[in-house]
Length: 400
Image (cartoon, rainbow, N blue to C red; front, side, top):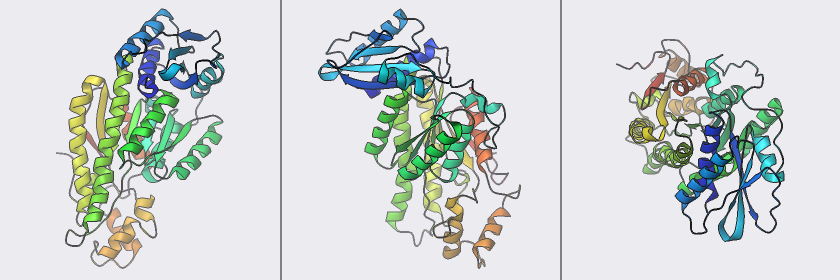
């Protein structure tokens, strides 16, 4: 029996039992002979040859027979004589205690604790993610880090997925220390490799049961003229920005669909952080713009397919995040790249390149983290939109 496939369904059942409140699921596989299951445990019998659907039906019957099942431990026969433990609770600490010790959950309840105001919050609208479980790819730096911080400040439990695992671990430790409890989880993920993406979503399923919000943010840029860019660089940008979004969406949708089967009334969100370059071409930056235009095509197509699974799919198209490493890194940032490639005629310094791009924005500045956070909160809150590409550009790009 695949625990990573069953855990999201169980979280859906728990969400239904809790009326949509904050729910985290923990799971573990134990040797049957060593399993010591105390009073909180509810045993669910599943035939050895049962497929996933049969296991779901057996689990649903057990949950329905034990109303108020949130905070209970469910034990199912697993492959090769083992026992699969599933526990649903109001926060990660409580769910972990149930699985590891079989005891009653305790500790703070996610979703009702006091929170400090944050520049990454929208003061009220941010409540739409309070107590939810979110994933941010490319979350260890740049826009991704801004989004992780904003979601955490707004009460979400955030998975920080990044190729830079050490950076994700540092950020998670910082946020946990500030909150005084577990609010962020580091996760290794290379969005360009399907085995890495699949393994990451399996870990998410086993450690938190499921997700409410997936922010596909990971992206790269290699600026060059069409006349000069090598195929290797073009393929690299396409593989991360376009194919990477496809892989994240594919495996996220599988998890979210199983969760939806357990709680059909619960809607979830898949948001791609796209770019203003996905709405208008970018001179001497065709690989990036092409990958982002393609991403919006995927967003619209996935939105049509996944709506029946309760999954909304939208894109946010930010303007330039001038203060982040993508633009300001002194060695590899876009200001340096554009200066070297001569994209800004007459520019002799990085400062002149930056001033040139700031002057293009009617509001006179680059996009910042709180601007994107407000857009995320809007898309999550708005229940009647899917397949949209929302500009956050200070007026630089406007939709007709």
